[in-house]
Length: 272
Image 1 (cartoon, one colour):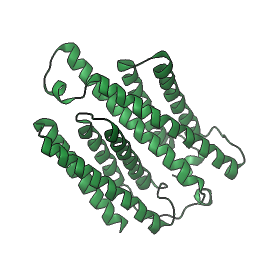
Image 2 (cartoon, helix red, strand yellow; image 1 turned 180 degrees about the vertical axis):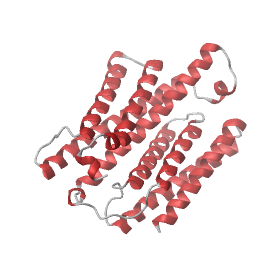
Image 3 (cartoon, one colour; image 1 turned 60 degrees about the horizontal axis):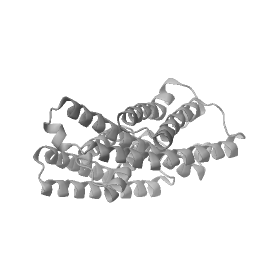
């Protein structure tokens, strides 16, 4: 059942991304309305997919590569819809839907086999730690996308070439507000993810911190976002600087998520 639901979610995300792209070039309000509706339906179907896999697997489906990437895509969709609920951001959906579709494509090519969890992962801490961390990455991904859009729009304005992107991208103020929203939500989620991971390590391994490569790079990611939060809310660092750091921090976060287990040995990699 979850396999068919995933296929349906993937198809709906594909249609939503296509509709958003058509709207990006045509700017017809009816197409935008349909694109957003398709994305919402895809997100609901995706939520049902994750729930169905939970009942099939008997554990929270955030353990295998397929499951974590799928949940990452779901977290990004959640972040996008939460922002759209409060703010109006021109053509953000075109960028986010493409990124969600890319993540779903990665998940589609990963093995979807159900696995038996090793004893360490058979813990109530798994859904708390993993879901909080992946949701945080979803909001950080949206901040990175917003940062890219900000730099594109700023470059257009500085060069006074008011063409395709200028009329279709949000204002710099709106994109800065997007960055503010994503950091305000994503950073506490990442902090809670680290806290629950430390409590889990204490319960399972006897100590809160092991300097495992994944733990170390997660700390590096946390410090980067902590620095961005400090500069933004204390020093008043906004605009171009915040956009660049959001993109750089996202690259580090993605390396932490994907690259560390590939290039470094550690107990996290044994159970991914």
